Image 1 (cartoon, rainbow, N blue to C red):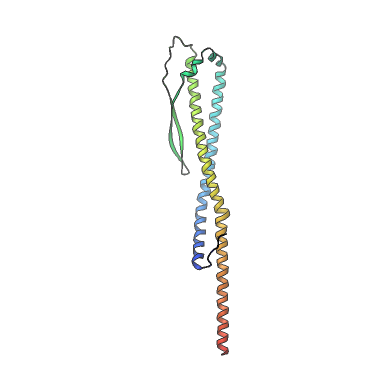
Image 2 (cartoon, one colour):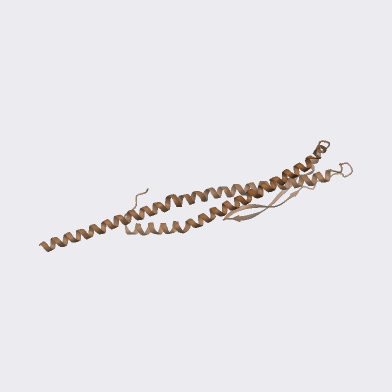
Length: 197
C-alpha cells in the first residue's frame, strides 16, 4: 500500500476515488456479463454450423467415391472473397460474416459427369460454412480477449482499489480524529495552566 498523506485534501481525494470506483464498477460488471452472453451465443452458433458442415460431409460421403474418378472436381470451387461487415458488441468491433464469393470456373458439361454440378454446390456450401466458422472463431477470440481484460479490471476494482480507498479513508479519519482529540486535550491543558496562573 502506498504511503498516503494524512490531510483533509487527501481524505476528500480518497472519498472521490471511492465514489468513482463504485460508479464505474457496475458498468464493468454489465460489460462482463454482456461479453459472456455474446461468447455463449457465438459458441452455440459455431457448434450449429460445425454440425451442419459434418452433416453435409456425411451426406456426400455416400457418393464421394466418385471423386476418385475425377480429382479435378475440387479445383472447380475456389473461394474468391469472404464478405464481412463490422459489428459492435460491448464497445468491441468484431467482424460479422455476410457472404462469400467464388471464382467463376467453367467446365464442359459434355465431358464432366452428371454428379459434378451437385458436387460443386455441396463444396461451395462447405466452403461457405468454413469461412463463417473462421469468422466466428475470430469473433470469439476478440471477445474472449476483451472479457479477460474486463475481468481483470473488475477484480482490480473489487479486490484492490475499493478496499484500498476504504482503508485509506479509515486511516485518515482515525488520524484526524486523534489529532482533533489531541488538540482538545492540549486546549484543556493550556486552559488549566492559564487558570492556575
